[in-house]
Image 1 (cartoon, rainbow, N blue to C red):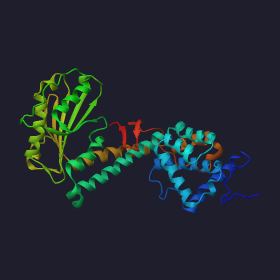
Image 2: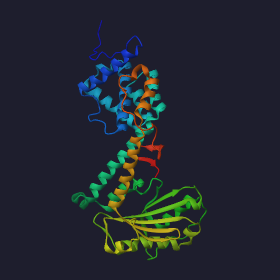
Image 3: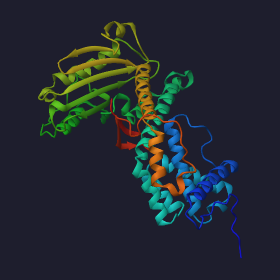
Image 4: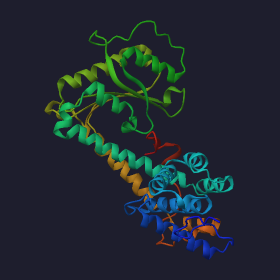
Length: 386
């Protein structure tokens, strides 16, 4: 008779004694740490990370107890599977379901029970939301290096590199905006404007630039608070300048020309839509500083038109402050006592060991202002209301 290797004594017991299950689960986690396959090398940085780790331990310990042969897997393979499980928990319940089904081949009953764990407690919203915010904060740190460190700054190309990066991260200009036009003419701007209004507006001639040249805009972002209604539509035209370019008279004249070209074309002005034009560069030259009316860089405001001058540092700092606020809000709203008390009650057979009582905090729930339904941390998209 062959005896299966079981160094931590973690095979499922024949009885359902909760104390025995608790002792087993503690042994599982400690064995992983001793074996150096536990996928969290550092201490948790906040309450949300602590919850994330505890959820991982709940799921992973249950897998180890119910998946035949898991404890006998070689060290590298076990470390890989635990890392895979951590990534699935951080990403979404759907990813977890795939891992449990196809990679770990957990029995259906245990697989469904663990997937329900995340759905029952809304942990996907908490974990997904904080992951999205954390990824965006890392993006800002990387963008800061590209824009301000001497060597990357010297090599960065405006149109083929910087422009492409920014076009994929329109949240920099507001969560409510989506990309409509990327590096195209004013006529393309008009065509997209028509789509947003679901209008039968005829575009029979190109939009004429005030300088009689073919104006090309970098980015056009649009938002509709009331879909297909003119009084709920807003467009943001962004002109990007490479690192090292100061915003002076030439840059301001360029963005003003775009704005005035749009305003003088009656096809744009047939309905009331808010238009915002913004030029972003390394710093403001004295000319731009003199025109700026306030700290936002506003240089023109009339009826439904605004024009702003901004620096990259301002864009990064504004977003970092906003994202850090949401990260702090998530952290403050995690109630360890309430949420983990629920888990212990619902899954008492195997949770007590790895979910121990800790100091109470504020009420559990998703942070107000984060739209979990639209969050996709894998792609960096989601919605954070301001």
